[in-house]
Image 1 (cartoon, rainbow, N blue to C red):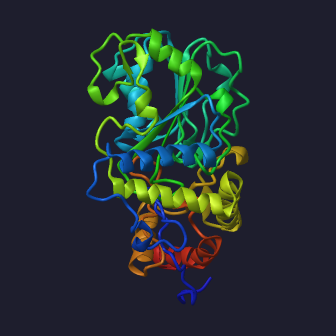
Image 2 (cartoon, rainbow, N blue to C red; image 1 turned 90 degrees about the horizontal axis):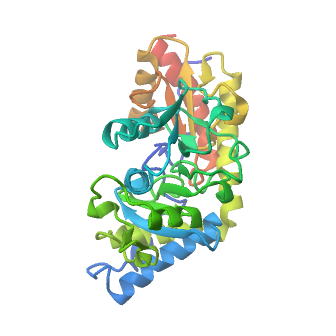
Length: 375
């Protein structure tokens, strides 16, 4: 190893896990067609919102009988909407292996105060035993643990003949990993992750089974207006045609449209997944060969291809020093591990990141480690 600074720097140092890097070649000029100063309920506003829904279906390959809605408060708002609207009809099995999953456990137990709840918990780096999940109950889980870098390997553990609903927080998986919609009744995500959109908006996708639950189940608790998806016992169909519950940012909508159109141009979902896979493979190869780094995910099949998390030999000050050094050099921004995660680094490898930038980052990780350790 050497203490000399590497000669090559990433062209784009944005490796944050949310909001994530913008699409390659992004400039504010791409938003010049935004419907600014216009009501989201105007004809033009509704057309833009409906286009965002239609392109989401196209790029994400959502089945035609699933409904897609744009909702407030990012992925968190979308998940909360699902929990408050759908749970309570039967028992709940809930899975958590990182901070966001743990948040949904807290909501189910402490806010909704449900009693018939089975918790399936695992420490950072691992998955719970998926074979123990009871699908007679509703099942709540994250597909990809953004703060742990651990994902479910596939949907094979979910039976097609399940009795309960599956509610999946897929915010760092959508557009980068293969979601088997036939096994998922609710899917949520936010624009700010894999497609690099702006924050504040969420998307909720409902299967026919989820819609049936909405129209037949009345929650035992008061429902805030912001969470209501039915009126008079029927689905508010306008919500899934672009008639949002509250006022969206039309600038953010335009930015999402730009990203979706880029995704279509490069080859759609298959190309997006391939880009994320290539990025993660480069970084994981470096981690595997490194004498001082270890992928937080303990099983290869569960390694994330978006939020790659790794620990480092040394005390917990080492990754913090590295993150500060790399930011000061303009090489990598916002790659410190999540505050509740084990000490380490987290590098976003989603589809908007260029593989060449991940490759250029690697020598800098060596340099920053040497500096942090005083080697």
